[in-house]
Length: 273
Image (cartoon, rainbow, N blue to C red; front, side, top):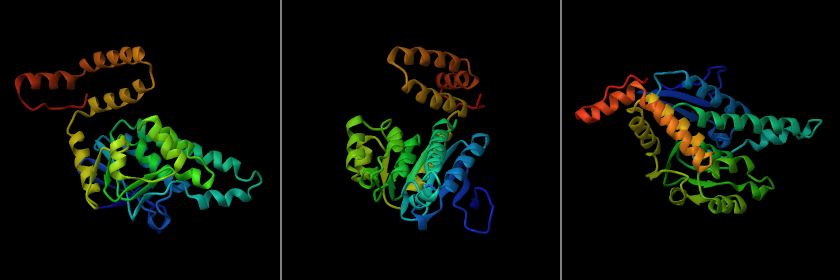
């Protein structure tokens, strides 16, 4: 049964949370507002990720959305309303960029894989959310864009995640033109992993999450953290760091069990340690 991420009012929850086996599914639920990332939705999503980080029963996460749009990015009406503040909204804008950036980093730092299931349009911070996830499955109806340049607001924070997923020239083309790209083009440039038929993306993302969830959670946690840390290092430092990580990983119970099972040609029995 689908449960609100945090039940606070009688209004429909802006974020739905359910568990499918050992997979946590978080569903953006502001379809009338194109699932724009309001202050409330950012907070709900960050809180849910923090909860899941401590929940050993959840081994992977899928982020999906209701409606025809995955996410149109920041809630521009919410931001524009603060132009009436004494500072013309500067403090609020800084606050919103900070909490959104913190939430995106929570996706990356979650010690469990996070998979985006993109059913429709993902623009600006919505595209950033897809890029921040470890993996992404897109419907063949999905499109992706960083169109801030069209309204005089360059997609600078989405740029951070986008430029860490695709090559510089592909990222710059999206950022400078604002033009949308198809799901297939997003797959070609590395923004998403797979493109599937419309209305199957959620199930495909859950299936991929379940595939990863069958691995040792301890090993996956080590690997995900190491992947992002080494990516920011120069080549020599990355190899030194990775060698240290692999040495420690070899000492783990699950590595001993997994290697032993491979040699004995049997299925490993993980204890996640």
